[in-house]
Length: 505
Image 1 (spheres, one colour):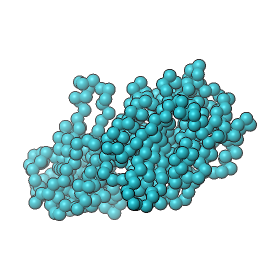
Image 2 (cartoon, one colour):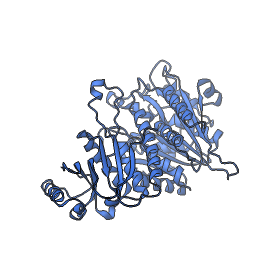
Image 3 (cartoon, helix red, strand yellow):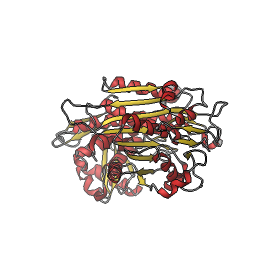
Image 4 (cartoon, one colour):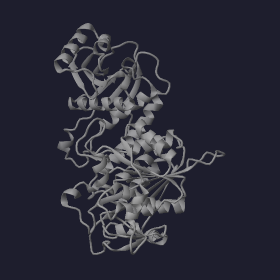
């Protein structure tokens, strides 16, 4: 886990001396909230706020040079007080952190009790917002370019009254969560020239090592995969020179004498580069296909968080990453080929660019046959059709169990990750019927692609309560905003971690 960058401190009075003071402002309350400042400073801020039309709306930022107790004041808007949520607080802190970094600020001080955000949940949100915004993917920049990237060193949470009893624990949790999200983002951002199936396997081994033996890892290669009949996944992998890796993580977290925990499996699509195979993508659609392993990155990020925390989840936790490349070559799968999945179902491949569902078919089948989970969540950059329906920021959610799906959606709302439930419309399953095999890997209709992809996956789930999350849109952003930078987002990770640590069905 990274060195702690957020600290709690008790101050007898406001203000103490420091470099930059961060103040959260609710809309319509600027005058009253500035009453804590010396009168001349409050008057100066009000004059600038009027000139810039700063009212404290969400995403509004105002800076003021004090040159007194603090060099600079940064005011971040939260919007109407009645509408303030942890997500809004997190995004406000993130935007303020970006502004502070652009001004080469080293440290910031925030008084949560004076800003009305002193509860434990808000402390976690403050820490997350700061940490997630305060990171840059500069791995491949030259030293000269790296020096141009400035990050804020510390955020001090100062209290004039009693410290919240769980403040340090909430900061520790948020630091671990931020570390997992940043890991997932960096894995997605890594180019396919440097990130291969074996790279993901190495990350899984490193997570297990950091867990002190709590997490176990098993890596299946081609011989083991052939033995269990993972023909769908191997078909995707066979066109690449890079060997496939079927990565399995496990955290039992068993307490002696405790009641047996339900089994939970988190599966992530892990195509480290998707060219489309012989059904080759257009060049413009291929540029960002290093991101096609965002689901697997989320799984690794989740287990990284569990490794960092001295706390077991509510479940016997499993993770699966079917990791490979989808490449065209003389060995590549062809349109018209028929393959057999772990559960014995045969699949006619009509489009080799619908490969993610083939890899997930074997991951789901493996989970049901060998792990027998009570609950499964698969997360995948699966269809452009989901982006057509929901845009770039919202994930599509499909589930076969009402209470499980409702609990997942509640967790997503709690974490501020936008998701929308879509139907598993059974009549559309007929569009996947093949004349030569049990199924074909694409629908015979050009519409409803996200739905038919989910229905295809459903064919490989027989007993488990299951949720499929299509993250094709929100897993990657061209332009950053708030606590989400440009590039990989780590979407879905916070929802799953919140669910397995804090929620129960």
